[in-house]
Length: 91
Picture 1 (cartoon, helix red, strand yellow):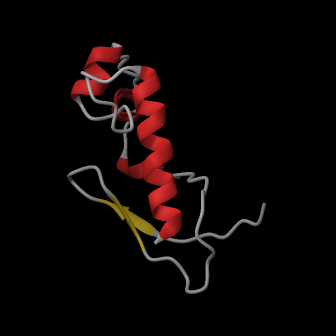
Picture 2 (picture 1 turned 30 degrees about the horizontal axis):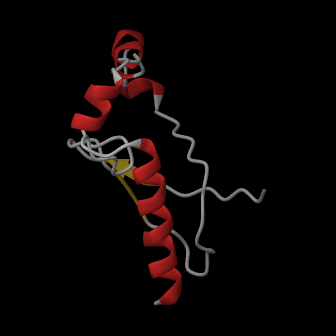
């Protein structure tokens, strides 16, 4: 895996803004964030990195379940994903 280093900003809304160099291939990337130590106290950093577990129902309600619909079974979801991918490949 090749590694590049870019600079970015984290907005007040929690979004990462970064300008990528031209010509990078599309696909998955691993993101590592280095936070300047002078900007965060150890307590603030610990709070920001605290994991808040959610139930499955909370994940679905928050839209974190990849498009799963509450009234849809697992098998129906898989079938819908396959259909959508087939349609994307045809375009």
